[in-house]
Length: 426
Image (tube, rainbow, N blue to C red; front, side, top):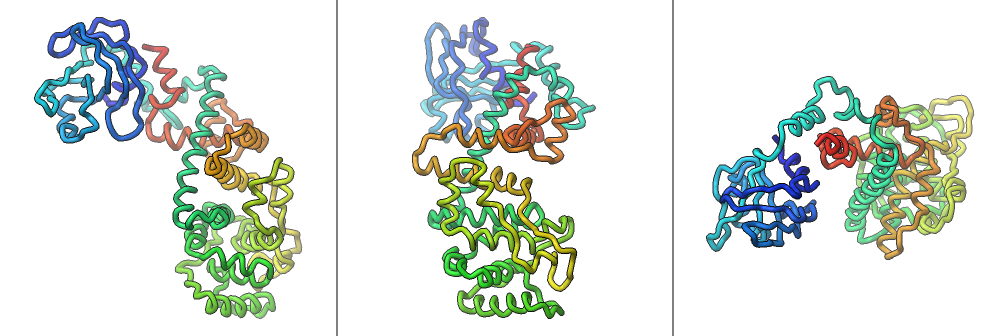
């Protein structure tokens, strides 16, 4: 038995209409289960329960055992003073309010049929599961329900990303340009170097980018040097030597710290090497003044795509690393990479900025994410194998949110789809 099943049974009002009895032998009727509380405090707010002929309105706390009330120190927490009913699986000790009056208790183990426990265990404890708990039943869920849940999951994902953006804003004294810069660095660094690049970006005074962006050589020197891409090499290329000399001057002028690690190349395709990505980013900032403002005001994806359509400095057209010549090619930001930038940085940032300005969230961002192609990763492939092929980026983002925040954590009863599967069997 787990507490989430008890919360599910109570929250879904499965006890409504049943003739129940409290542990004090008083007749008990559930009129309304209340509203789930996702934060600290009682599990449900504003419930209505009739106990011994008296209608009570207040909060509900749910535990496996009554003694958990004391184990969690609720008797010392004023948030629990308005609890009108303690719902437990097993009543092993009496619980009292501060004034000494007992809190009515409902013991559930005599009211939950064995079939419910069996269905619950089958959902969460299937030994043959290879991807998610409900994989054998996933294809049976109504497509409309799945679609609705995916839209909610995507908004939930945006809200979660907004918390990260808010944290960055606090660190930068609400400098939206600096936050954009850090988030772009994370994306341009990919999964291999993204966290390192973002961490370094947050330590850099963004005013230095503003002061150097008009001179591309100076800006590239700053970015390559600050992010650890100018190691001491036996290289005589004039471009490399220029960057080294310029960065030495900039590091002294702006008192820049030395990177404690070197960006990784292993595991990346040459087109995604940090040298290539950093040059593309430098060209983006060099060519676009007021990048944040421009990105926040663009009206359609075509304009956004055009703004992100950047290439590298000429040197990188026949190089991937310093000193080693390769076949010449124009290394522009690919369509797939631009889509990732839009999905992971620009839409979440615009969502957060709209909230900051008090703008109502229009359907534009949803329209944009539905226009973008679905991402390709192991999670999306896992759902594809279940017959749930992501048709666009909204669905692939929703699948990632679903897997990371529900499936992999066995939070099936907090998931609309898992709750639906259990509900139809109770």
